[in-house]
Image (cartoon, rainbow, N blue to C red; front, side, top):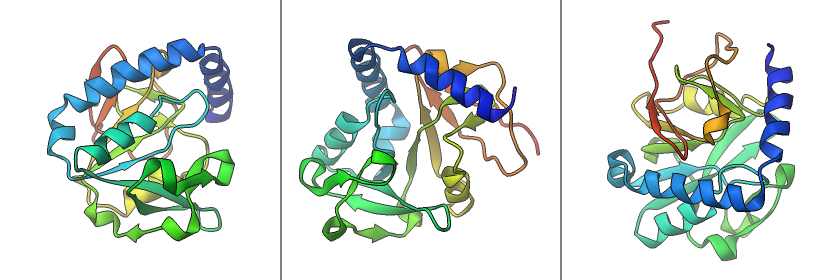
Length: 194
């Protein structure tokens, strides 16, 4: 199945989750994340800001800031399909609806920091497989971002168990993530030798 068809099918499937289910599963995923050593050790977390029926990251971001972790959120640059890291200090005050109707820092709160500061990335996606490959939303933003960061930075995909497939299509430029966290388990991705 090609990525476009798979993306459409999975987004339809995910859109059928009730708000209660999204909240319930997101809470479990957040608690599982807070208990991970990779999270506990991280000083600077780069997290997507969830929208619609994605795993809710709003509470993850707020809690991370409240316990003294630094948090960066993505600023997409549509022209180059790049992601910049902007440090967020106050979730409730500094965000506004932006590109793709996703919460984004208001101009006066954009604080671009070098991606080298990041030591943990929370990665969105539409579908994932156990090798760590993912189907995103089709922009290639995250693969470009992964290409420009230290290869040792831990990348954790956050998704619901129903988004895990035995295999997703991959291209030569796709970069696998290290872990996938669902409401049921933590998957340590098997790296394929390239």
